[in-house]
Image 1 (cartoon, rainbow, N blue to C red):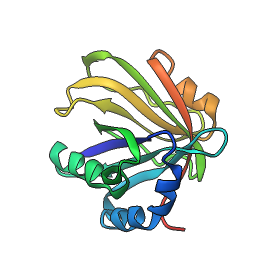
Image 2 (cartoon, helix red, strand yellow):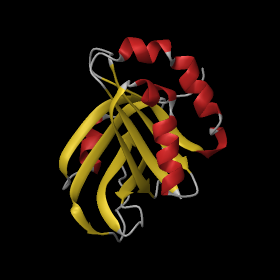
Image 3 (spheres, rainbow, N blue to C red):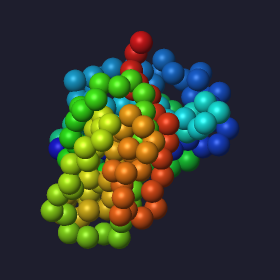
Length: 168
């Protein structure tokens, strides 16, 4: 099963995150082959705002353990954590930077999302644990307009600058 995890930073936690970067990477190294997409998100002033991971894991319990056992999460760097089952499609573009877009909907039965076409890096539905209910969508796109266009029709859309993550 695939899962989308978004750790949203607590305001003022950038120094803590910076000190813990090696612990974070060492933790992620344990999941190397399972990680489909990953990387930090930023505000316009380069302040860290979060961390994205799309990962293949056996079940929702393993996904929650992955998300909540992460060292920065354990240290209190994040204000909240979103963990949702997904059916990720990608990679599209091999861009190393772009935008994370999140769109949310009132829960509804899930059929499938239409594949966005423009400047796409990857995308997936955000689903209930059983995969039957659509709760929203996540997209990684090369440009902010493309991220927003992919989420047309979704309520509560948010877009964050994103960079492909991992050891350099």
